Length: 531
Length: 39
Image 1 (cartoon, rainbow over the protein chains, first blue to last red):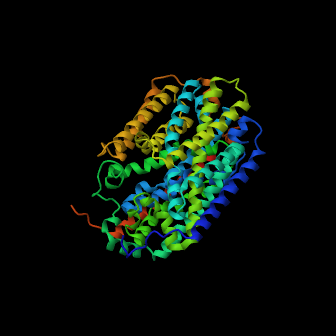
Image 2 (image 1 turned 90 degrees about the horizontal axis):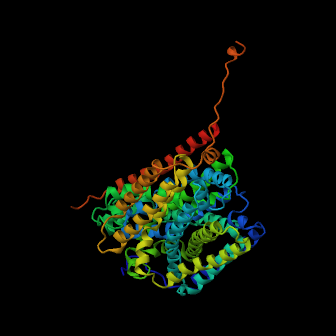
Image 3 (image 1 turned 90 degrees about the vertical axis):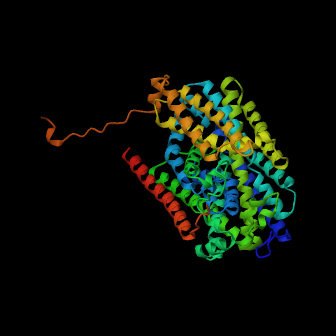
């Protein structure tokens, strides 16, 4: 380790106590929200979607909370810390270009379609949109598969950082976290989840903005950052680092094929992620003023912290710590953001950051797990066995929530199987590519058919599995991650539109209900009246 | 081949990407809200 830079500090009593207090406050808040939310649902349908009365504040913060995972909050800083400025492309510099179009395209339509179709989940909305139980089952299975893989990595950063900061094994911290998550998911249902994710979104937005702006001031501005990094390793300041391999993940930083794929990745992920779109299921009908407020909230919360976390924060961490964090073989670059918090703000900011990171991981995991459990109970069991009682379905949900929380916990402590690790890498891109078409484009195109949607699900799943193997499962990788995104998105577009064009659309009655003919304004010139 | 590193250009590029994000979302929102009002 170089003595010219800061080193990872030894855990102090202040760090341990502060982190415990912060996390305890977060968990107490989660249970409290769950208990209050319990009074707001009476039936299985209300458990799944609430009363469809959330306004722009809760919906906006909840969307930010679902979108800003542990990766966005912590991993993106680590990537720029490790690779340099060029890491920003995949780190999240397209944050706004992803999430704001998700509101434009999905907010009102998701709410309206779900209400018209009396659907309580995104999957059910899709199934009824295409009048197909088989499509609904296929979508539920595909969503479950991808969300499961995506969920496995959610606790990793939080567990690692917890250990590095407090010196305490993450076992008890994570076990308490998932137990609390089970309590608020089970008793609070959709409403409790939406509230907790909203609080988490607002909190990590605040902490992220505080850390980013504080770090920029602490570093002395852009010029000082450049000078320090140019003295350390000039290639850290390259926006495209051609010295990196042009296959595997680094293609996203080293070639134009990769870099141009990054905004598409963020756009499709934000719009296609079911845990993002689900935030609109319980939303009330928005006025224009509410709609602008919703966008304003997301613009501020995502725009400032996310886009600085994934660019200047990583550079400043590198400026302060040099390569010292990489010497930690177990957690390495994952420590960049929390150590930056410690480096510039001491124990207080570090504890605040750690609390936010635990909240980030737990909130996104909660959103995923709630959808996964409903995928089974509502979209498969209730669909094929409609006589199943609400009580049984709620009981099944309780069990599935526990199961889907436990598996990421287990694989955070134990290394997941190699095959799972390979497929996890492409889960987010696969989800985004499939569901941007199957969900959101289907809100706008009358001609979409169940065949087109089914082919897209099949193609996207197979291509994502191939991509996981070709990008992460072989050494050296067969292809670049950017190339894989193009293969996914172009293939999904071809199967969706091609399949729809050669098959029959749903019934005219349904289509007229979902796509009412536009009202034609009759303008009568006064001079013509009576002639 | 060694790449020439120009930190000022890198910051300008970064600033342009941020500006693109902000402008696109603001203009897009304005257009969508205008369309909603017409409806």
